[in-house]
Image 1: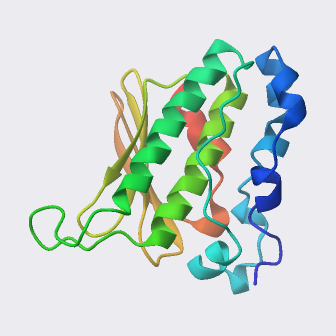
Image 2: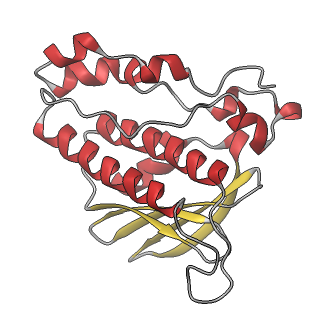
Length: 198
């Protein structure tokens, strides 16, 4: 069992009534952590961390919430995230051999963890006031899933692998290509995503 819950599902599923009255993104940013609670894996007990325990108390996540009164920039980010979330849902419907060969069907836990990370990415991008060109999920024939965020010549990719306690982070730009595995307990999305705007 996690020493600290990964996220408060009740808070995510609660209707954010007062948010509908917000008219500026700055007001939204001040409440962003309440609307989309932090996915702070770094706070959990490392000796009890397993992919299953991360997901055990997480109900099926909803798509990223839309708030009509948000700024145009924030609304566009949430729109990209919502489209990506729908695409991730679609992967659950793909049968074995969807790639025309021997690809397995996608594991629900892998998809749900990807959606949870997508929500956190969306929240951080709103906090950064940073609008990417793309937020694109991608299926991999070994059952892994990519979440790619692109801006100009920079591409940041988070690869979620089934039944592993780590993700693979890939960065690609004019300066070159780098990849590194990061354990879920050490994943700091805010720090990693800042590379896109550095």
